[in-house]
Length: 111
Image (cartoon, rainbow, N blue to C red; front, side, top):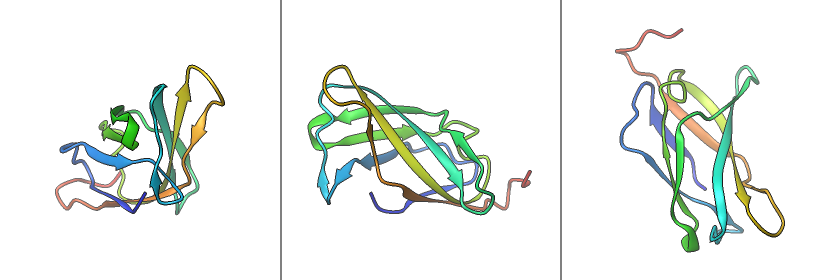
């Protein structure tokens, strides 16, 4: 997974992502859902991703993150980790940390 980029307050379009293992798309067939966390690199604070995460092409490891208001409220550098749950076999699956950069939006007041 390469660096993920967003703009503070921007919720569209959804973020397309590919779950990779060793540079090869992972097969998400059989996954019952994906959740995630985001950690602010400056403060170390970790919180759950609250936007919807939808598997779009399981065989090719593709999924989409539909940002919630909370996901993109704060600008800065973050580490994100996604977790896939499976009905059978070894579960859960976890991604390596990916860098997520949210650019500051001049039209939004920083909390």
